[in-house]
Length: 285
Image (cartoon, rainbow, N blue to C red; front, side):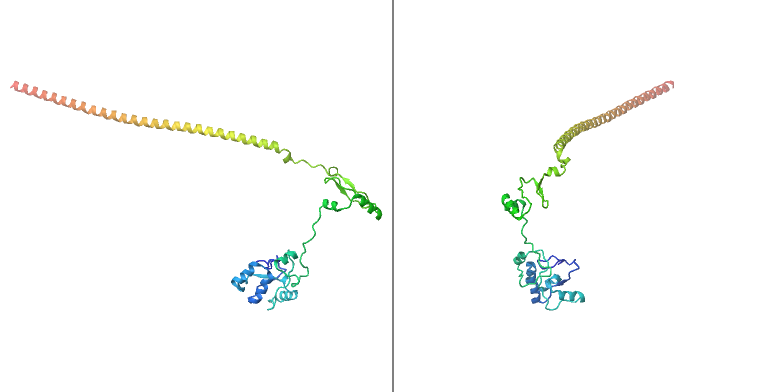
């Protein structure tokens, strides 16, 4: 633990003015230390795991006898075997808080500086003070008997202030006359125009966003139409290609048939010529 285990102490290990002493391993002595700390979590830890569980916990030197602490700090040795913390030391708690925590102010010795006494009477408001004061006539009578030239004047309102002058009469001082007029805050004075400007600006932005949405919708419709046209063109091209291939195949078929017909006619003509030549030969013989 990086700070003192005493519940009323806020000293930390980083503070070099105080030396920290770890809890002793002896159960009886460790129980006395834990009892002085009045810390619920440390007492629960002791009852649950024993004194060895508090080996890393410690108490600062402010809660021990100064003679022992000085000797320990000078010679750098451990505390005596019977050393037990018995001083509350400086604390942020009041005496009432210490008593509620379980500290006994009669049994334990306070340090040289002692405990801070925060139980002070609250400062009374000026209205309460004026209510408790005497009537102006009674105040004048008392001051006249004492021979003082101090005159009591009742305040008329909370906004009026007065100043004291030794031996003189109280004078009212108007805050508006004594102080310079407050400058109007620019941020507060033009709040409504700025608000209207922001509203108008937001409306313009909304209109611009709507226009952009419309433009995007128009562009998407145009792109869809272009896509449909391209698909139609591709389909038409495919149809034309098929027709072209069919016509080409048909033309090729017609060309082969005509060639076959011309070949047969040529063969027939040759055969006729052969017959005619044979007849002539026989006829000559």
